[in-house]
Amino acid sequence: MPVLEIQDLTHVFPDGAVAIAEINLKVNAGEFLVIAGPNGSGKTVLALHLNGLLRPTRGKVLLDGEPIDKNIIAARKKVGLVFQDPDNQIVGQTVAEDVAFGPENLNFPPAQVGMIVKESLAAVDLSQFATRSPHALSGGEKRKLAIAGILAMKPKIIVFDEPFTGLDYPGVVQVLKEILRLHKTGHTILLITHELEKVLAHADRLVIMHKGRLVADGKPESVIYRAESYGVRMPLKDGEKVSALTWLK
Image (cartoon, rainbow, N blue to C red; front, top):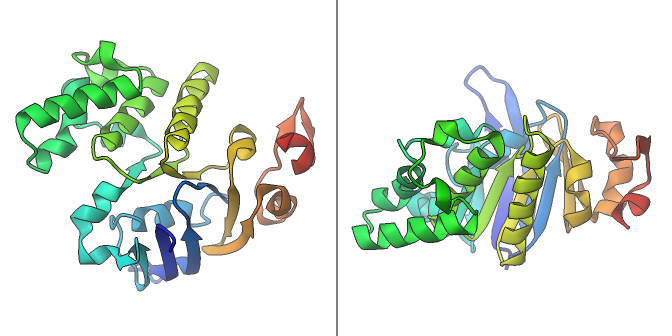
């Protein structure tokens, strides 16, 4: 049984615009799934349904075989979402307070919250910044803080929405290393990006969305050849377009 299953998922905005339509997708435990597509293809709208931040017009999302609306709080513990702009997730006056926000709202005992905060910051190498203001962190550090906040909820699945946007090279390296570490330690990863060159070599599957629909799904070396026809830039290597097989070596 897949850990996550999306069945005929459709979301229509109040003005009648169809954001996503009839999405069907199964994700197995431990997979590294990359979701690509041009701006406006519905990638973020899809992500917001995975832990109930948006409710579908039609269709459903299942976690471990159960509809997420059966227990939204449990769903949000199992599926962590790291937003494109980490500032949207910062709620604490200090780094430690920010990570503590989730466990505190679940009414964990103070001693347990302290332990979770310590473990989560250590996991992303931010322990030394525990008393610092989150807004004083670099872009890469803010994304790592957002990841720490998600880790504090002990999720099985982590969804990253355009995690490299606005980062310089050191920031990209910081965040990519952390994502790969999380995958290696058993987390299921769903990563939304239009920057395939950064992650394609690490992906188990590549899904492409176009105009609100899922149009391709499979092994990256098979799907990537159809990417440009749907407005997704082919990966570059040494300034040249290359075949997926060459890139993945």
